[in-house]
Image (tube, rainbow, N blue to C red; front, side, top):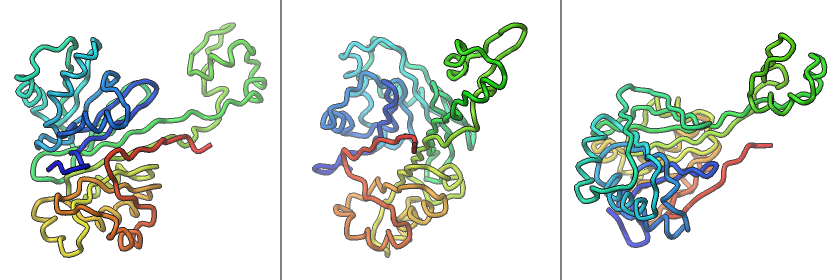
Amino acid sequence: MPLPRRWLTSLMIRHEGSSLLIDCGEGTQMAMKEKGWSPKPIDVIMFTHYHADHISGLPGLLLTMGNAERTEPVTMVGPRGLARVVNSLRVIAPELPFDIEFYELSENEETLVFGDLRINAFRVFHNVVCYGYSFELDRAGKFSPERAKEQDIPLKYWSRLQQGEEIEHEGRILTADMVLGPPRKGIKLAYCTDSRPTDLIVKNAAGADLFICEGMYGEEDMLEKAKEHRHMTFYEAARMAKEAGVGELWLTHYSPSLVKPEPYMKAVRRIFENTKPGKDGMSTELRYID
């Protein structure tokens, strides 16, 4: 439930002028306003599942996007039933100046591509069908002038090849791999909420720079309750982060009874040192390492 100074679940990813929203719980618009972020650039809205605390803020958000004079289509992604659920909510937001395009997930794992952002959707273990997501930006190898010279590639084509363009020159087809070194480490973000720990979560979080994961309970004696409701504890999330070899773990999706996560952090960090308790408005900028 929403609490004073704590809204319901949502995550915004911003990349090259476009925004992608995961879940849209009650208070999402307020959280965005507090950050100074606009809903107008949201091109993609993804849902983990259709419990109210993850989608109840959607009608108001759509109306705000419409009032901001957005006309470009919005893509929505989520488990089966997405179009039915969203169109039911739109009874109170019937007229929008933009189209909505739906993509419904049905497999245990699926890959989608939006621009240069690769998204892996994976089934998790909750009491309804629920998905986690990982987001990856690949990075090409470093340009090598030496390789270009060795292959007699004219200087005027170097920049175009670096951008991945294929060029025909004097009967030869010139490609980017002729002038680039091996791929460099990209950027990866993994996100999971409303689930028991699973191998598929660890697999899809592997090597992530940032892993945002639910921690419903911080109290060590709440494990049985977590199992009953198919959620997880801080400690289970930390163990998955350690197994997946992530760079940093943010905990989120706390129980309403868990008002202050900080007292549990010492025990959690004994499992995975680089853990931070999530809070409203928390954000970071992920960059290529060099």
